[in-house]
Image (cartoon, rainbow, N blue to C red):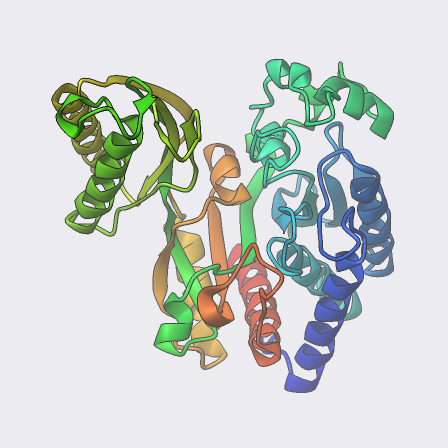
Length: 421
């Protein structure tokens, strides 16, 4: 079978995937924006609608023990392994319509094509809509995909949202059994691979004037909350040489963080996105300042070098300004390489469709990184106009989606042929 999808068919399936993204954008806790959080009524309704679309595509459907939504095109091959394709269905507050969601919609369209073209796959085609990648409600990211890898932490059940509702209470209200979360874990021996299609969320593909890209690795990340404690004092009566200004120390470190990241050699990045100074009065020297640090790199060693430099600078500033430094790690994720065979398969599928798709790393985290410990994984990126994501102006180019569905179809046919030959 020639693994090429005709343009009219690709366009029809691409348009439906975009229409469905629009439909899901209306399932929101915000009246004037998009917000769909884990274990919410919007999560439940989203799973119901997506399940209907999966069924219409010829799939058997189910919801697992943590709230991930699944669909399957069953293989007739005895002891067939599972090719899992998916992304996430939850959002950040005031989100765009495509982050995560488009990847699930394209996977359903791919399943529909498998059904209509009666492709007898030598593997189960499993589509998953992950329940929580963003960590918006319980400040714990990748809940759905970590559960698949057997990494659901029972301590998460005690975490409370801003309304004081614990994850345990929310799971019960959702209709899940809190004693069965481990049942969502998959057997690595039964998995062929995991593929994920996602908008890039950055400007690289647009800069290179390419619709699609093949991900080489997902950056490792570490986050910390850093504080300087000095001494509050009167802004008019305390001479500058006698001050212990925590905010001035934080400002010095924030500039140093930017400089250190810029001088790194392998694309490392570091960001301070939150800052709070107390007591917060215009005529009082800030005695306490708390701020965040998010640092990322494609190589874990590079990340550690950068963080060591930042911490040394933080200590130097604290000593010079007579401040007390406190450093609390809040998140850690190791860098993950994409599987070389999947990269090669996606490259071949792109070339077959006349797409000169570049290789590029992902600076953002994805469900693929949580699934990587249990199976080979790979990712296909779709151009993000303006590099905008996590924002209502998040967008895609319609023709890019046509190209994406064509490449995915070629890839799955090529995967089939590879296993049968």
